[in-house]
Image (cartoon, rainbow, N blue to C red; front, side, top):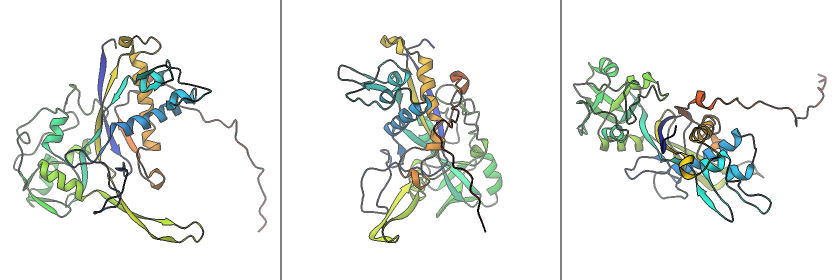
Length: 336
């Protein structure tokens, strides 16, 4: 890879609900809403992905240099400016600073899960497909009917006699012609979903295309909303007046985001090459499925499985568990 930059699209599936809050409380349906894009549909901002990836990349580097990993400087230590973490995510010292070679975009919702008469289905719209530069087809390229929906061939066969499909409380007629979206469909980079690691054909079999206005209503009416209350540590009971609600992107949601990896050689950086920048970032993506992104992580939120990670390119060995600092107690005999 000797070009100026490498562009790559990743897909992610919410294993748990994901909550990226707006940083305050509001008066409305929920007290603590999640962040939304200009079209009113939730997203995960690139800053949240980058900050999380930086931390997880440090974990994967086995703690070689904490200052470099967290971009933190103290009187005793400063970022080195040459390791893969500094080059990939950027750094700042008293004398100089440099932006990272990895440029993150926001993670946007592509397919949204919702219950229907035919079981779980995933919903999208023409604008979402066009954002990903999927080649247009006759069925959905100019689709803008708020009273109908375009089904896959599989769903159309199941609901042909019914003639309708519901999304919770919303009931829509079925369009005559089905769409042809599948896991082998190519998009922006000339690669298919399957080639980018997202080979969930069962989701494409249950994919429904609706108008942009209808997608907005479906998404915001089917977000997960939970209620929590603060607990008094002394009494173990709920605090008076401490009940609050918060919303989240539901599990099963399919998101996508794009990465631009700049070639360090083009910026006069000889310590790290483009392959190493990509492998450093992708190694962090492996931990999103286990450690999560966003808030409420201790309440079962945040796990995101990312598809499209090139494990062959990294050729990294997984971290090995160690018992170096572990202490073990002698087994005790229990007398009954």
